[in-house]
Length: 245
Image 1: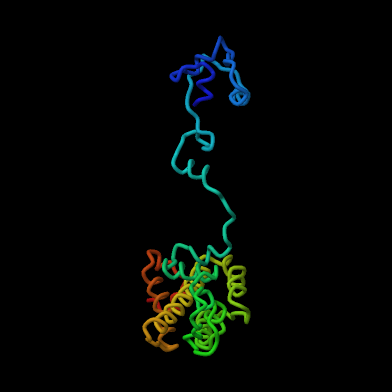
Image 2: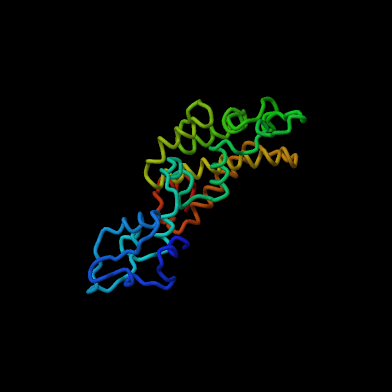
């Protein structure tokens, strides 16, 4: 505003004040403003009515969506998003899975108080707890994954947790919508209930069995599928797989 004031134009000046005939008549201004004048590469036409045009929008109309798209920083889609944030997902399950894929759950190896002894994995009581052990290498979680694999007809690779997640993203995110959604739901439910069982044991000394975990996982997926608006459109194979009538 200060530089515009230096041009000598009043604060209520109009575009017509810098037009003579059909040519621009810009006032002498500091170099900073002159560079702005130089960006105007067309001549005025007094025979056409002026109108505001919002360039980021194809229609020329300013909308909240077009402003957001202009302001936001765009990034490539995470290839795991189709397994995480699809329309059938269970929000709390997907959130815990997302944290696990980032290695951000507060497992024992991530606690910063070095004065306290680390508690071994509460699921097996043997090994030190980290994401890789808790979700794949632990004897309890391994037993759960074997049951899930049989249910989904999927053979999980014997690799660390994050590599297994990459494998799932590469192999299943591009599958048919129904099957990739179901696999994403089962994966998220498994991670969620393993994490929940870990917290119940650690904080409340309540121990569940592998069978109970399995029932909770299947129940979560089945209930979500059974309550979909488009449940009648589910393939017969999925309805049989999850006992949905």
